[in-house]
Length: 129
Image: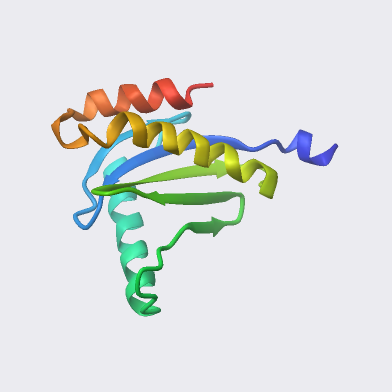
């Protein structure tokens, strides 16, 4: 019953170019302070953790921040970060991943040729409420 009261929500989704941290596109349910700053911060944290722990081919997959969790899915030339609020359970884990694979299918072949507006539209279509 408590998990229904505090149900999970995907609040934001960011498509970010690997390495550079350039924001390729995003979708937000609520207004965000600075999406460019968030994409750069996520890239810096991701790079720092992966370098600091010298995990070889391991990747940072999630960041927990009190009421939010940020889930990161790496693709060929970019990664997608989903900001999720509410009660997070292992049964919910497959839902964001399934949605991210839809993003991969639509974006991967043409991500570098799309404008930010086009990427935003694709993400909005996939993640709107």
